[in-house]
Length: 271
Length: 271
DNA sequence: CGGGCGCATTGATCTGGGTCAAATTTGGCC
DNA sequence: GGCCAAATTTGACCCAGATCAATGCGCCCG
Image (cartoon, rainbow over all chains, first blue to last red; front, side, top):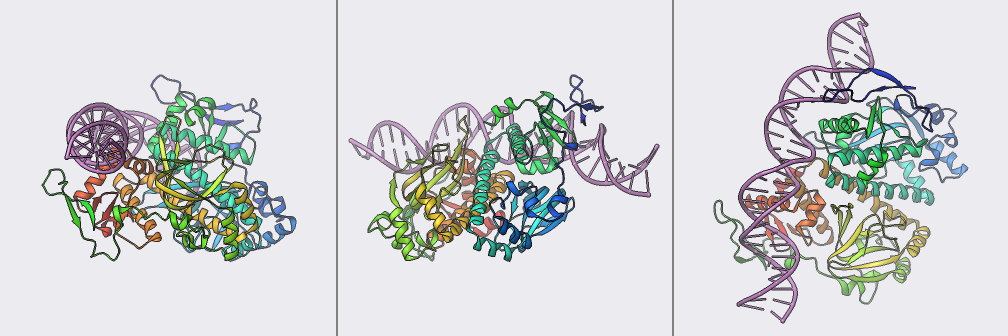
């Protein structure tokens, strides 16, 4: 059971904001408390084995042998960041690369006048530092509690040079990112506000599904402002569009996320 | 000498469209006839040596040894495309990867209702197929005459597996593309029409500069529609913005391109 | 329990860029 | 050079989403 905010109960009035219990039993999944991914610090940093890492199978380290994993482990510095902490800032000298093991990281670029573009949200298993030159190309900070494996750039470079199949894996990650970036260009350049929101929600659903069981409940730990800056919209437009989708029962807004009530319609719009 | 269209000669009237000769002598460069990059088919496809290829030094093949180059040459199929020809189509089965040796290729994605997003323009030296899975993620067609080195996917895969430093080079290309994609997201999501145009022109200037001498004359072989679809604008807005920039003497519109008359102002806007 | 702060929502109004509709220009071709 | 088709420019008007301005609401902390 989790707490949810309930949908419209008046004709043109605002939402009823009374709280009700919502039964999840009809879904093929356990409840996700407050729609946040479960932290796995203990596993990622505990008795320390990369072999036990929760993101092992979806991350860059998946194809490594036991032996290589041990080497990797000796180079990795498990690190924790609190909500809002900066992992690194755009244009700062790039000392480290990171593998996210739990939590969500906001990746963004700023213009001198303060306009912001969020270029991505890194989820557990994602790798930060692919597009790295001497300086970071964007800033990264923690949305909620985040744990990462940090690698010094020197160690990373040496490792990549020594292990071609790790390089191949990184290249796969980079090309996958590039494909997503092209999708995002289509979205930013040519889609309407409603389409942007719907594509975003479906995309997040898919990404979370890789990390746990598929679910129609999509955690959204980032703020409306983050979503707006990711989609090239304003916070007001994001909010209004969410409200509209909720009123027509396409989605249900719950604390920390949304539930997709009509995935068919959403997929039709995204097509 | 080349022919140019001349700037405004009345207060609020349209441009004078009489033609005049324009002397390029004051620039540190030879003239670029009609602002088109010189075709190099003969060199790229002629007596056949990759070693003589005009794009060798800026392309993926730069770090290869003589011996490796010979192997590469045996796998490459030099191919010519005429203006408007399709190199490959989005969602088609990916059989080949390509290295552009001359000309310009338009890369784009389509939505089912016909909306188009140009995700990039491939120039000589650019590699197509980085983000390739079983199917192409975007369409590619020739803007003007184009020559490429085509490689079968099987040959490409085998070569990459056998040559880690080629993989490393490809990875560099992929991460560079990713950085550019992030820039483009910023542009599409948060910049105004004028900023978009100016960033585009400066970006093209830089890219051409890598291939020949730096020049304030920027060839634009693509149509206004292509530019609009790259920048997330309409053709009318692109045209109006070009006109406005020309009226205030920031640029000069010449056949097949523009000359940047006030790079300082442009760089200030792009910052 | 209450006060304050930050996020989110909602309403009213404005506007940059889109849409629609003509010209006008350019380039290819006989 | 003249003709046609395609590309581009220009003008008039419109609208999706931005901007400006209040609330609303949860949550933390004393």
